Length: 101
Image (cartoon, rainbow, N blue to C red):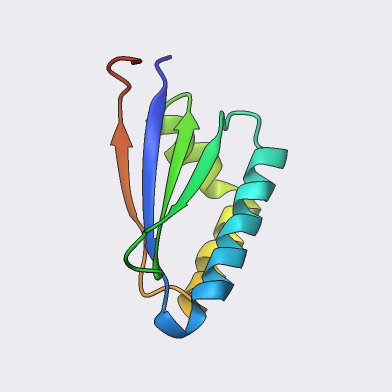
């Protein structure tokens, strides 16, 4: 099973940036504490636009991310509540590591 890097890009509603940051951070903590398949998540904020966040996640495979991970109750709960603080669904893309420098 090869590893995969997942980029998840969020855009917060301008009036809910702090809520979005807090809720995404809480979700990261829950995923890292309860999903052993997750090999790490890093959250970045856009230097020029405080409404934009990117998660860089490490998973064993795209199937694990899209299957078991996305069905977890904490993920489903986040998806349902995110409409209140996000401008829309995230942009999710999958990347294969090529080389370590």
